[in-house]
Each structure stands twice: as C-alpha cells, then as structure tokens.
Amino acid sequence: MKSSETLRDVWSLVLAGGNGERLGPLVQRWLGRHKPKQYCTFIGSRSMLQHTLDRSDRIIAAEQRVTIIARDHAEEAHPHLLSRTPGQVVLQPANRETAAGIFLGLAHIRAQDPNASVMISLPTTSFTRKSSLSRRLAPSLGQLSR
Image (tube, rainbow, N blue to C red; front, top):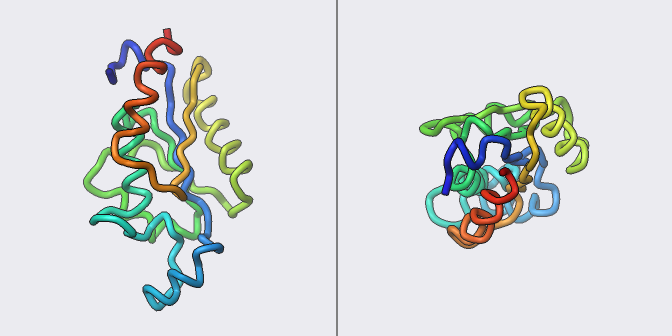
C-alpha cells in the first residue's frame, strides 16, 4: 500500500513531547528515576516512541514523518531514533501540552509541503495492537490522497 504515488501528500505527526506526569510516580518506583513514558519499554524490547514510529512507517514514508520532541528530552530521545530513518525531528522549545505540539508539527509540515492534504497525528502515550492501525487506515489513505 505505501507508495510515493498514492501517499505523496500524506504526512504523519508523532507527538513525543510530554513529560509523563501522570505515570511519573509509577516510572519513578520502577526505574528509580523520572523518565517520560514515551521513552519507556513497557512491552517487548522497544520504547513506546519506537512502537509509534514503527506504526507510522508502516503507512507513511519516514521522510514524511515529523516527530515533536521536547527540547529537554533531546538526549533521552536520541537512542530511540538510532538505526532508523529519523524523518524530521522538531524540538519543541517548552512543553505546552498537546494542542501546541500539534500546531508546531502542522506548521512545520505546512512549511515543508503546502499541498499536504492529510495529516495523521500519532501520540506516543498509548499502545496499539501490532499492525491494527495500518490495517484500518491504509485503504482509506490511498483514496483520500488521490
């Protein structure tokens, strides 16, 4: 399904800028230090961020993926982006919650591709069963981008 012809105007936006406040106490007890949940490995051997990037890359080319990361998390995020096409990473100057992260990503996408017609926002704060997202979205994305 993923081809440059059918998905040329489709971008993904991965939100990974949160501080993990709600899960903070659990992560603190588990790891002995604070760590935003998107960088934690709860299932398998990959972090929530890595799972999200994999979901995105199954349906949209990595070159058309924008990942929003808090500037304070740049060092923490780096290992999670290694060994993959990083796409475009935008450092959010300060965490201003979800709406600001989405706006920052959309502004970046708009500057890169004024003709972008469909954008998919993927938060790193939830876990989706393997492949279920790409199976549900792939047929629709091909039709929407035509």
